[in-house]
Every structure is written in C-alpha cells, then in structure tokens.
Length: 351
Length: 111
Image (cartoon, rainbow over all chains, first blue to last red; front, side, top):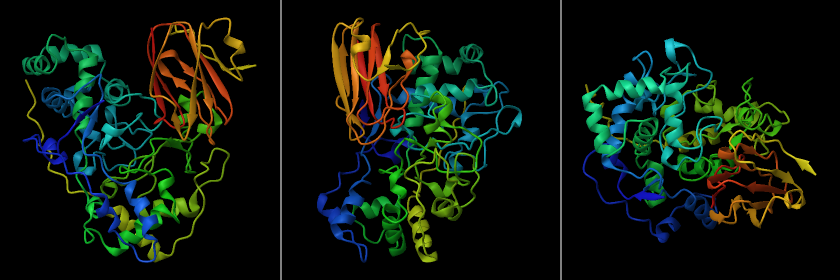
C-alpha cells in the first residue's frame, strides 16, 4: 500500500501539492465536551473518527500525476459510452456529492436503472464496490459501468480503438503508462487513480474532532452522541468515513436481493446492501440503495420504527425512539459532515 | 462431512470443506491454520506451496465466510467454531476475504 501524503484540497484542485495535515494531539481530543456525557466515553467515540492524513494507493497501481490527469479526462469524457453522450460524471456529478440527485440512475438511452447512484467520494478507502459488492477493486469497478449494456453500453475493445485514434489520448496514455499499450487495464488504472483523489475536505465535524469546540453547534454535538448511543447508527456507519464496508439488510421495502446474488443466494445476504459512507450526506439526497427516502428525517424514521421484520434483517437493526429535539440533533450532526469542497474544473478533452 | 460447491472453471481446484482437515488430507502436502477473531484474520499475507491447504478457523463470536473470487470459492456461512479448509493447488496470488466483513482479508501467495 502506498500513501500519498498531501492535502486533499490541493490534490483535488490539481494544483500545487501541500504538506499533510498535522496529526492531532491526544490532549486536543480530551478537550471535547458534551453536556451530560462522560468525558472518557465521549473521547472513545471521538477517537474512532480521526481522519487519515494520506490517501492510500494500492501497490498494484501506485499514484502518479500523469495517471490521475488521464483518469480525470476519461472520467469526464462522454466518448467512454456507446452513445458518446454519457460520461462517468453524468451520474457521478460533483455538484450532487458525486451522485446524480435522482432516486435511481439513468443509463443508456435514458433508461432508468434499478439502484441509486452511489457516490465516488472517499473510495480510496473502500474495500469492495457496488451496492452488492460485486467488484473487488476500484480498477475493476471503473470498467464495469462502461461495459454494462444498461449503463454506458460501450464494448471495451471498441473504446480502446476509439482512444487510440485520438492523438491527445495517445500522448496522455504514453505519459501515464510508458511502454504500455492502451488497454482495459490501463483505462481502469487511470480512472481508479483519479477516483482515489476525490476526497471530501475537512468538515466542521472534523474541526471539532481536531479541537475547535466552536466548529459545530451544541445540537450537532448532542446528535453525535445519539448517533453513537441511542440510535446506534455507528453499528454500521463507523469510522471517519462512516461506513463498515459491510452488507446489511436494513428492512427496506424492496424486491432487490442485493448481496445475495453475489453470495450463492444465501438467505443471510438477502436484501443486504453495502453501507454507504456519510460524508457530505446532505448533498447526496435522495437516500438508500433505491433512493426511496427523500430526506434525512425520513431515513431516521425508517431506522427508528419503519423497517420490515424478516429473517434476513440485520441484527444491528433495532427499534429506538427519539424526541423531535433529538431527531433535530441527529440531523444537525449529519449536516456537520458536509465539507466545503473545492470547485471541480471540468477538463478540456483531447481530440 | 459437508462440502460447499465451487466451480472449477478457473482451473484452481479448490476444495472447501467444513469440519476438519480429514477431507483434504490426501490432497494437501502441508496444512496451515489462519484464525478469524475480532473481525480480522490472524495474518494479512502468507506464502504457501502449491498443494498446501489452509484451515480458516472462526474463533470469533460472529459468523464469517470465505470468498476467493480468483478461485471462484464462496464457502457459505461459517458459524463461530467452524473451520473451512481450502486447498491451493495452483500458483498465484489470491485475495481471501470474508464476504460478510470485507475489511477482513488475507493475501495468499502460492508458489
């Protein structure tokens, strides 16, 4: 595993690389307070949310500026679709938290897809990909929607020929992958490298974790405690990116078998989907694997009492009761996870 | 002895069994043991010889599972206390995951 020790902001902007954020001092964590909460317990909760200082890149596909630049071109290029109308960014739009703002995505021929477009934010830390975990690496994932008939409908052999015919791409590939031909592998590696650089900036919540007591409201602080205790969101939405990268049936009304299709139809995986991270979640409505819930309030209501009891239901899904004020607090905490990210410059594509 | 199905189309003739090593003793030259506890494997990377087997022992309090995509192996649910044996009879680099907890992974290099 290689680590790129740079700030998110400078990397996303494609500008000058800066030094990493300094590691947080332990005593800073200890200064956080929430009324009525044991300081030691609060510290334990907070320590689980400290952000990493560097983006991890796999040994098989280490970072390079050239690869990331090429990957960005490919990500925003509609010529990667069979119709030449859809790019990766058509669904993974930076304006909507790298989603599309739709309940479910729209693919080739504007056909409505079966699942909500997941974000590509913070995928450098992902373990396996897609709602059902059918892709084992980001490199593999990057090639999946391009080829899928219902999504971008672009056979890869044709895409390779198209890219080889464009002088600008020949130059970009040569710079990123010296002595290699344009191939499925290099296309996947370039897109995955760019995607790993898509990282949410430090949010108000992170500044509170870092020691700035005024960074979030008292309501958000109480909401953080509710998230970790009474509502037990943390059972699955754990860590700084708020995901365990595991699969759970959360009792949504759905015919989609989810993870079970990838796991020999084992009943334990029926209706189970990957836990999404919660960074910038306000910008990523609507919610759930099928986009069936419009607001964070509806999501909380679902987890409180709205789920379907069935054999595959996750053991972590248990009813809870929140007052209206507590629900507001929980939403305030979720809102504090949104960062002010740098504008994304749309690249001028090669011809 | 209960066997879980697997496809041999990859050419990696993995034999997956639950309950002990007896079923594969005739095939394997050396047996290795990897524990699963606290939602982690006891090692992150290991090297074995072609023909060796690994016994994955669920020493955890929760269910696990063994998935090796490159060998088309998916073990089914592995309850606490259960063992899953996998024969590695082809060289290569194999990523072993828990399909329930994908952060649990171990890379097996077969030489």
